[in-house]
Amino acid sequence: MIDKTAREAQAIRDARKDFAEALTALDLMTPFFDRTAAEIDQLIEAAVTGYIDSMQTQGAQPERDGRLPDDPIPF
Image 1 (tube, one colour):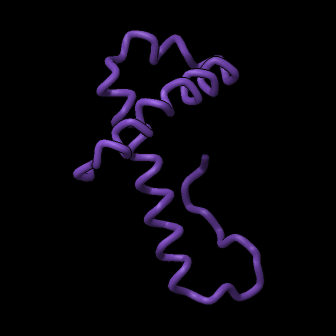
Image 2 (cartoon, helix red, strand yellow):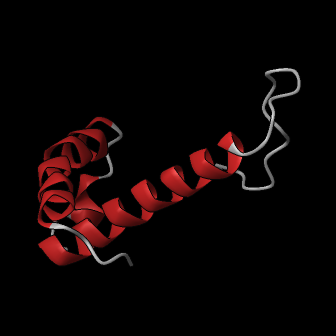
């Protein structure tokens, strides 16, 4: 978890709607329906933090051929 600024915390709260829409579109809302706002925010924060960390790591390395590397995670 990061020590969020007020704007970062608001951005995470604002992302709840998009997250809920994605869950609904994928027919996954039921398992998440009774989760607390704090739990949903934790999921959003984990995804955003992982994305930003990856972009920073990638930005430090020259892109060789534009292809994505093999991904060991199956989803």
